[in-house]
Image (cartoon, rainbow, N blue to C red; front, side):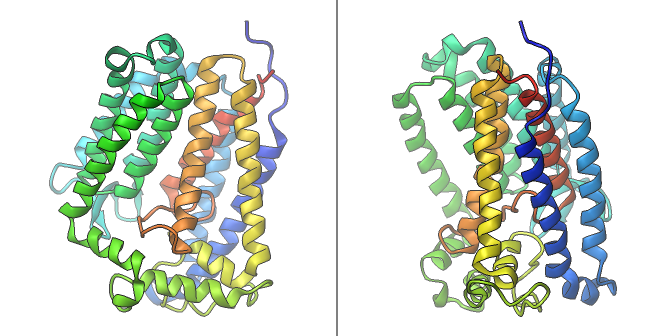
Amino acid sequence: MIKSRSNPDWWIVLATLLLLGIGVIMVYSASAVLAYREMGDWYFYAKRQLFFAILGIVSMYFMMNIDYWVWKKWAKIGLLIVFFLLILLLIPGVGITRNGATSWLGVGAFSIQPSEFTKLAMIIFLAKRLSERQQEIIYFTKGLMPPLAILGLAFALIMMQPDLGTGTVLVGTSILMIYTSGARIKHLLSLMMVGVAGFTGLVLAAPYRIQRILAFLDPWQDPRGAGYQLIQSLYAIGPGGLLGLGLGMSRQKHLYVPEPQTDFIFSILAEELGFIGGGLVLILFLILLWRGFRVAITAPDLFGSFLAVGIIGMVMIQVVINIGVVTGMFPVTGITLPLLSYGGSSLTLTLTAIGILLNISRYSR
């Protein structure tokens, strides 16, 4: 029997709000020049980020006070809704195309990104299935294949946009949940080999992805083309040194790093706040990781445990990939930095998911 709830994990609350505050400040600093050039308003992106931050905090508060097992009842319906939205994007003229990907639904600047909400819907669905049928997960056919088939369908719909970054996070988070539920290593290794072959095929099928791989290996082969983003990112991080150039003093945000308020916001942060500022952000994410997995370990039931693993895993996979990209460890994938990068759908979804995590923490043993 689940006991009465207590206070939420205040470490998670504090780390989240600090990262959110840093994010709003850095979105303004990184985007001001671009916002004035495009919109004639220095605060355009900052005002929108602040609006979605407030909206996300409200959502986080409500989710923190809604018993998490309620979502178990809505797991299948939620997944069907996001599948429907992903299919809508495939209809010509319905979706909004930005940077070559038709990933948004809405009107003008007010739009949502269904693939972002697919991540949370998939986490809830997998948490429900894995908690109810954990004893079956050791069997390849009846235990492992059904959730992987649903995951494959979601990944295929996202790749039709195309959005390899979000698809990668979706698959990585789902595999982490399946692994923690007790799946056999030999099954996962077999699937990993198939996945590597499929990923290679996806890369070879799109010339721009091949260019990104080549640019990752040697960005100076094409410094004005495929290697441009990485080179400019490193130009930002390098001069930051220990203390940085000072808040608002970035040089690379002056139209050198493309859209510095989104994927490469950590580059601008490192340039302006230096190693200490970047290190502080990483420490806050590590606190989230520590407390998030602590919630998963001490959750009162399997559903809560798998749900916590999925939520904190989703956030941390994005953090690792994003910072890996801006520092030249991974090829450019187009993944934002949670709680810091500009983006309404991503920010609201992340805070909503953390709200669910906080509710699980209220019942932790």
